[in-house]
Amino acid sequence: MKRRKQTNPGPPAAAVQLRTGGSHPYALLRGDIPLSGGDIAVYRAVREAVPVIDAAVRKLIRLTGGFTVACGGGKTEQALREFIRTVPVGRGQQGLGAFLDSYLDSMITCGSAVGEIVPRGNRDIATVLCGSIADVQVREGDTPLDFALCGYDESGGVAPFPRQDLLLFTPYEPDADSPYGVSMLRGMPFLADLLLKIYHCMGLNWERAGNVRYAVTYRPAGDGVDRAAAQDRAREIAGEWSSAMQAAKYGDVRDFVAVGDVSIKVIGADGQILDSQVPVRQILEQLVAKTGLPPFLLGLNWSSTERMSSQQADLMTSELTALRRSLTPMLEKICRLWLRMHGSPAVPEILWDPINLQDDVEEARARLYDAQAERIRQEGPT
Image (tube, rainbow, N blue to C red; front, side, top):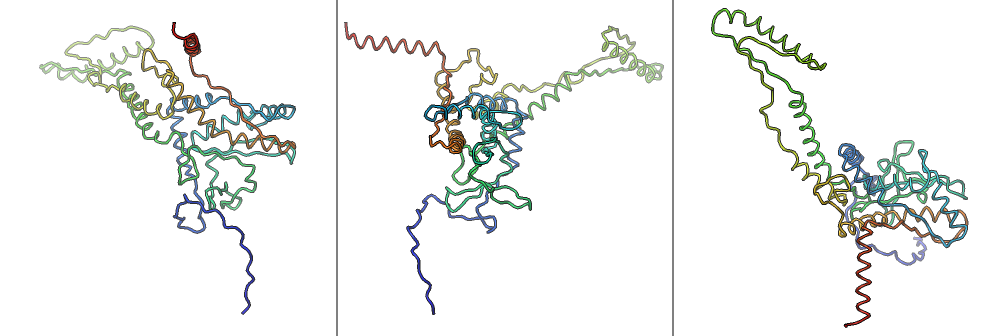
């Protein structure tokens, strides 16, 4: 019996401790975790149905601000900044700032964002495009560090994209057991459904009570002559009432004169419409709290002295800093690839625009108090 020659297997691979022991029940789909497109459709429907949520997402995108890049100065840095300002990003837009808006919109709404770098040969980047996360699936490898972005091929099967190094993928606060991120709108569909039910009922009530309808009642007298002519008199009253209403539509004022026991009432006038101010505010408080924005930034003035306190400004700054921290690796990858294509070994540094949500007067007063306290400390006790 011939023995097989043993080879040196080399050093053992590092073992990952935090790894789930479960596996996919179907071998062909092992490692594939498809993203549910239904969730994305629901989140986009929530934004379309509730304007406050859509305004909150757009304000978060605007408040995240712009950025610039530093890579050691010189002509290379100037050329890189010109590329950031003028690179085509599709749909008639230019600049990574426009690409960042679409990318961040997808990341907040869908929980993940995907993009693609399209090179022009090996010397330059032709365009940077933002893709639809609903068309992308993530295939995990043997370790949490190994994953591949997959899509549907020509035969309808799911296969990894050929150039993984040119793809951009950013999950938003992903869970430990899923490579996909979590949408900021998670938990909102139930509350949004309640809010839409209230608004729908309000619309129906206004259609019922706002467009006034009248009930004209004619009661004939007890004698036989009046009862015999009741049908003719009711038809005549109805015609005169209809003529008076039609005349009022065109601005003419006509009196309605009737003989006998005739009563006119407004239909639904006695019905009490439920007060919607309290439940609507409670629901909006929950929705706005999920976005992290102060209510008055969304036009919700629940207090006569509504303004942003220093604590709210600090919390808002931390929220925007977290969004920037998630986007920085993606921007560094684009800039690093551009530098390598142009033969530069420089390391790009993303410089975000400063966030200033504090009141300038309050900051100046605080600096004045600090300066006065420092002067008193230096002069010593008198």
